[in-house]
Image 1 (spheres, rainbow, N blue to C red):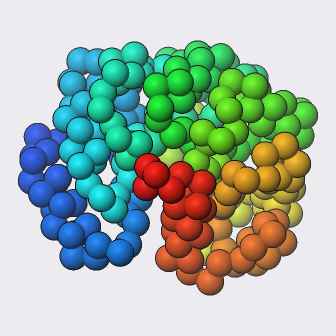
Image 2 (image 1 turned 135 degrees about the horizontal axis):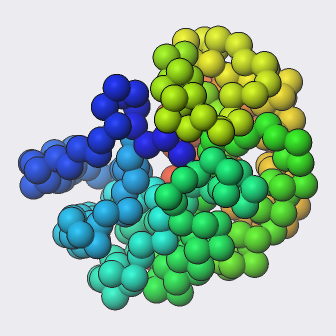
Length: 272
């Protein structure tokens, strides 16, 4: 939605020291050969939106295909996957999509691929042998949220076979307080800040705990009902929310990663 974590600098930075970064990945994974590393991208900007121009990800995908104990995640709100479909990825790259109901995509996610386009791209990636994942993040508390998010789960499972979905993560809208004035100026018609927010333990503004828990339970229960083999987890939430929302309660972030890694190794034993 808002792809920069620095409100005063609405630009995308492309780092040129790619080989140096990959060398660090190689060294770190070699030091712990019995650990499955999940290397994420796309937290502060889109991993694929400009890749047909930059051409970076093909090199990175080929690199990860040779690593015995690491997975690469490419997170996007684009549909820009055609140039990746024929690459020798070796099952080591997971392409993930940040998703919201179509009503939120149309109202708030400007200049991104529409929901239908993202799901079509996910279907293409899955057919090309990639594992895919979905991030319900940032979830928005809007008038028809319960129906909207349940339908979104159904739309995803109609577009992609459940046995190709690596995980589903859940996270509600959270933001640093200074971001609101920037969004109000750049996107005066945005409605994402309507409602009551409180300051969380991390200093970010969040929905009230009871609202977050309702949003999470709605999706988690729907995923469990339709595709119980897909692991779900919460992003940036405290233990009490986990306890009141999820069927399992990790003690640390390492526990979350261990559970996901175990699920992947069980479901995709040849590839991982």
